[in-house]
Image (cartoon, rainbow, N blue to C red):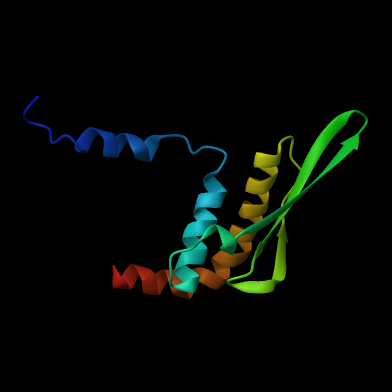
Length: 113
């Protein structure tokens, strides 16, 4: 087993792992970090979740605010069966909205690397 460096197999594996439910949250963190040009903190993401009970079924709906980037904007996600999923949907919405704006930042970020 001397031939393969210890870190190699794990690295490859991580890339094909199916992304978990918090995938969009991570993506949003990455995006906001690039746009703010600094490491993000928990305070940069304010999630608000409301639950509604319709006919015995509880659905959750989250919105996320990014005070460090633009305090006036709120991104609302699609309703979901769990709070975690609802927050992720809100993150997805924010990522979709910010992706267009983040284009130039991302290019710059790539160029710097």
